[in-house]
Image (cartoon, rainbow, N blue to C red; front, top):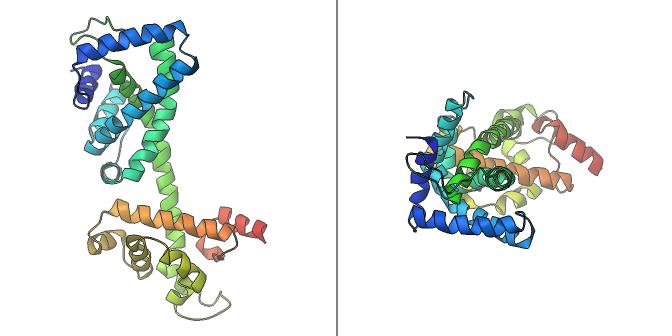
Length: 275
């Protein structure tokens, strides 16, 4: 089965109307949009609707793993190396927020390429005579999203790796023991982390996030935390990452001070400029 046919069958499962009827409607719509050069208010309305209607399809295909499977097959056939780790597949299956982060970036890139290649360049052909016939505009657009998925995913994966390194320096409980002699006051590591200002920030977080932070600082690993909270490892890391962002924002606003040993240079510079 060709890539286009596989995508078409996946998309058909999300759309109520028969494929032939969709193609007929799309052909008439494209003819109207061509009169305006695929520009102007009418095209903007079409593009907004295309993006809106494609989001639940992309969410469903990412959640099931179909999107990743078809995308990697596309790149393999093109001789372009592309691999999605099992951990990231599981995260994109379980996390609405992570899926949407990727989907939004993909859509913003794909919409430009879609207009250029499918419409202005005439890449979409309602008279295509392949073994399964032509595809509808939505199928073509989802296929375009798959071509853009690789670079968006690689950027997202690199950011996750960077976040993991920052988290290791920010919430590694061993770091707090090493800080005892460096800080101006002495006490247990937990009292250093959970000072009044920081506790206020933590108390404002969801119960699951509070549990993740406390268990992390008690020395539990991601797998142990996920097991204790009956959650997933990806969800544990996501909650810790979100709390890290809260901490860094508070530090940049001089609400708290994160010790130098616990953050990267970017936050150190923010704190210096705040002073």
